[in-house]
Length: 362
Image (cartoon, rainbow, N blue to C red; front, side):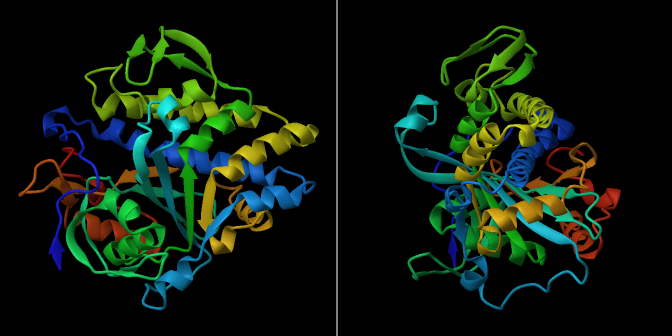
């Protein structure tokens, strides 16, 4: 095994414990799941004219073939476990225009959540895995058939860019002993087109934002944001607060709620043309496991989740502690993390003791 203490790029040092706010930290979890729910809503509300074009937009990854049989047991109930990734490509002219650094190749999984939907599908629990968590990456097979050996102390965020999505699933299963039933990846560049398709989103900007990095320049108050502005808004960090992730997390949560409200306020079924525009933008930004990689499967899965109310969803950050060798990284805190995964494998009822994270003081 090899030792690796960083991924493909460097990150700013984590804030010291005194500056980390657990409740705000958890807010960032909701943006990726929210976008997922928007995608499912758009797909589920779309009539099947022009089915083949929409169906062809969805990209599929054969996770089962890549992982083989050495996996945790499936849940003994009708519950489901999803791994939801928010990938942030930094390549290409479009991302350069959006402040994403177009000279950088590849993509990163900046947001990762295990979403557990217990039997009955009336509630959900989302567990966020911090991107700077050091994990043991198991031996994995890349898309080209080559084998990547296992490695200790690998930053979780690097698994996606170095080996691919199937290895992320395998890494999560090995660390949690939770069987992942479905994989969904949202490309945040495609998220821009989705916002434009619904005609923009109205947000109440809490304070003046002047971010030279992204070009975002907003005064405090209500603004109607288009897709480019929206992507800059959920990415902005330098223009608010002390420049840490904490301010950005608050904006992401606020924007998510505004986005969901905007989609729900539109009568998609009354306008097939508008429904198609939204569904086209949504499906183009989505990659799923092969079991969901069709419009029909995605819509059926979306309808099966109709009983889940996002406002009552429980969001938890994987309990972590600062790594003793590298204070800029974190490791899963025990026994809290083990108890959390055990509860997910059982029925999703998380004891309070399993939510305490030493790194955040929570």
